[in-house]
Every structure is written in C-alpha cells, then in structure tokens.
Length: 174
Image 1 (cartoon, rainbow, N blue to C red):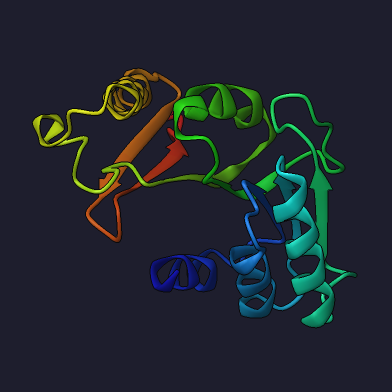
Image 2: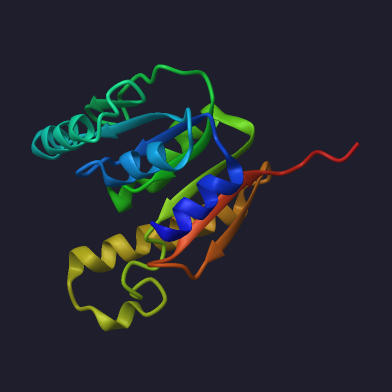
C-alpha cells in the first residue's frame, strides 16, 4: 500500500478502477490520498462486498467510492477512461481482467497488477507441491509473458511487496 500511495501521489489520477475490492482498504486509501479522486471498485464475493460497503460508509466516502458487486469479467463500469487500473483479484484471471479493462485505460494511464511473485513461488515453483498452487503459478508466469509480449504496452516488474507489474501504453514516436 505504501508504494500504491506514492504512485497515486505522483500520478494524481482523476479516475481509479480497482478489480478486487476485498474489504475496501485500497479503495478507501486511494480516495483519501488524492483529493477529488473517483474510485470504482468491483468485488465478486457478497460477504467481502458487504464489509467493504460498510468500511466505505464509515470512512464517509460513498460519494467518491463506487462499489460494484459482481463478476469483474461481466460487469459494466460507469466511466469511459481510467487513469489507474489496479488488478488484485483472482490471480488466475489476470490476463482476462487485463484484456477486459485495458481499453478503458487513459492515454497516460497505468495498469498495476499485484502479487506478481505470489509469495516467491513464481520465481521458485519448486517450493510447493500443491497442484492448485502450481497451476496458479503457471498462470501468473504466462501472464507476465503476455505482458512482455504486448506491442502497444510496456511493463516494468517491481520487487515491491509481493511483486508489482506496472504497465503503460508505449509512446508513439513521430
């Protein structure tokens, strides 16, 4: 969150889209970090969404933080472009989330993908014997390869927290 706060302060986005609300911490912190920021956050789990809604209300941010309860792969969002898109939901679906929401990214916007190292297991998959975890690790590895293969975007992987991918549109040279 510390890195996200510094990113928010430097980018000063007007619109922030979060895929995966959980209890609303990131959405609330983002709204409190940047004056006038509009946050749209999507959560699939009804119990988490209820908790997040309660936390957003307690923070007095209902006017600036819109919580959408539903599947992020099927949900309509209320704005045409977002300056910052934060992907922190089902790790195995990152590519689908990216493909679904990248068209909404503003010209100078950034897509942040969290948990790119997945507790160090992406770099050291031999550390787990769990079949489900191994499958998830492979999907994260393929997601990273996908990001690196994009011609219209450039991605930087940061060794911050559990690994963060910052993806921006490539600048077109005249």
